[in-house]
Every structure is written in C-alpha cells, then in structure tokens.
Image: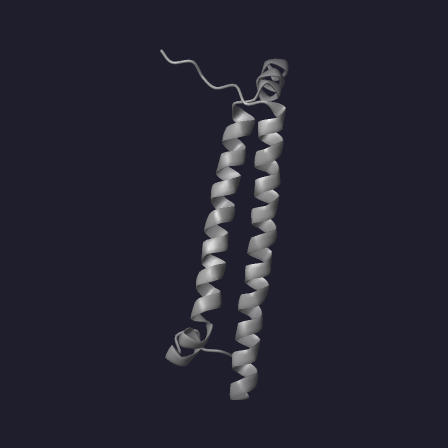
Length: 99
C-alpha cells in the first residue's frame, strides 16, 4: 500500500488561485468570442447569426477555439482544486466532524 499525499493549506490555496486565474481567462476568451460575433454581424449588417454559416465559422474560428480551450483549462483547474481539497487535512477534519 502506498502512502497518500497530504495536501497542505498552501497547496490548496495555490490550486484555488490557479482555478480563479482560469476562470478569469475563460471569461476574457468568452468576451473576445462575443466581440467577434458582434463584428461579424456588424460587417454583414444582420441582426441574427446562423451558426452553421461557413463564413461565420471562418470569421470566428480563432476566438471560438481559444474560448473552448479556456473552458477546458478551467474544468481541469477545478478538478485539480477538488483533488487538493479532498486530500487536505482540513477536509478530513470536516468529514470527521460531520459524522
């Protein structure tokens, strides 16, 4: 049997900070994608976008992929944070107190 790593409060705090940074990056990427959509509509003089339109997809591809990547990084950061929390002494104490 291998010993389990005990996550320190500093480890959990670092993971929380990484998660917060990933959230901010995702919000920024989403804003950039929305701006690209607005620019596309303004250039075409339309009110609604058909997301299946090839021209729209070409026009927003870079910002859309950046947004999807930022979402993926945020999900991964959330998972790493959860792992650190579950492995921390504070979480173990909360579990013991809840029983």
